[in-house]
Amino acid sequence: MKKIVLSVALLSCTWLASAQNVALKTKVSQKAESLESKVVTWRRDFHQNPELGNREFKTAEKIATHLRSLGIEVQTGVAKTGVVGILKGSKPGPVVALRADMDALPVKERVNIPFASKATGEYNGQPVSVMHACGHDSHVAILMGTAEILASIKNDLKGTVKFIFQPAEEGAPEGEEGGAALMVKEGVLENPKVDAIFGLHISAQAEVGKIRYRPKGTMAASDWFKIKVKGKQAHGASPWQGIDPIVTASQIVMGLQTIVSRNSPLNESAAVITVGQINAGVRSNIIPEELNMNGTIRTLDTQVQDMIHERMKVVATNIAESAGATAEISITKMCPVTYNDPSLTEKMLPTLESVAGKNNVALTAAATGAEDFSFYQEKVPGLFFFLGGAPKGKKESETASHHTPDFYIDEGGFVLGMKVMTNLTLDYMEMSTAKANNTGK
Image (cartoon, rainbow, N blue to C red; front, side):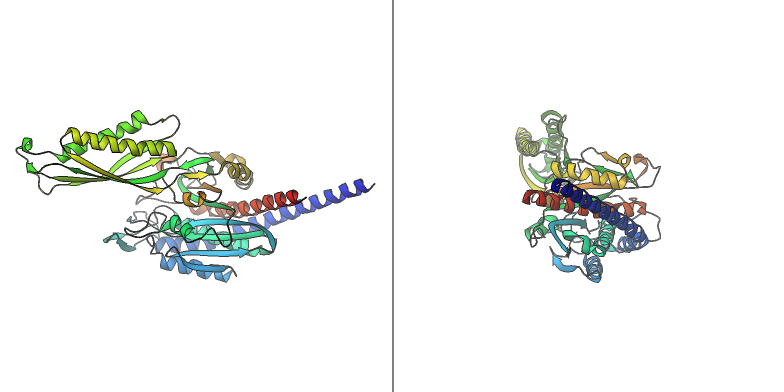
């Protein structure tokens, strides 16, 4: 008899918990929809007033003011201009971090919208136009809305939420530290210690209402390289009297491409070597003594990354030697692979599907773009996914890519962004609490 009574009691508790969870999710959905116009207004303000990396002073001030108005504990000046908000729920549980990047790019906007950027700034000593050409303004606005939703249900939270508004995702100015690496270095994942972190990126190549994700390597490691080729100066009319670093460098560029086409296991992991800058000479009839080239390496596997670094040194120095020149190469690791923890991704996939609809959630191919969200994922399990921002009915080929003057985002996906970030937080807390209770029993 006692067993029957106990079973009935447990079923009653389970039913009650389920009903409470449904009610909470309904409340979250309604709150997100009511915040849409507010979030759009924030986004347009940030878009019209963009700021470059480590210079996001006004952006940070607006974020901090909003978080304080919600009763959230606020830390400013983190990693130069970063803002961190801490929201403690009324019940014990894990610490969930949610991240948005704040910085814009040195790009001149060409989109014909009322809130187009006309801002200017300075990038590495050069005057530039400034534009949110990657969607970080959307990320900030969505996370500010998410913070408002979670603050409104503080009494239902089974844990703590850490809101990370990060500067300089696109890279710090020359000679400065910045971005996620500096935030981690300054302890953003500690006090309280973060158990899991979630982040989204708006995508101009995915339709509004869609979500794209990938377990394991989802975005590439990014490395920068410099190669200095030294030859012997001569008159352009008599090249045999010198050693031409331009011809040598041309051969090196082609040689580097064979590392990808002939040494990399492309059926397993993509790789890219791109030379983006070549500088040499002052006159058309003088063969210069020296040439400098800069570029980037993108890999999705650490073993392939190491192999490419080693092969680049061998190829560059040997090609130069064959021409009678010398080549000095240096490689700087910038971002690790953006690696979605497979277990966390599997656990949270039902959340993505329940919020967006199963037919709207799909696996995506790995991208050779890089994201410094990867620095957080090196320390704690993380899930980074893509939120559709292309107008409905638009083909990928019809939308301008990120980092271009014509980059455009449809704001119709912001409500989904808030719902997903909020529900990921709630569901992770629920799962972690249930696991802790079962372990305790």
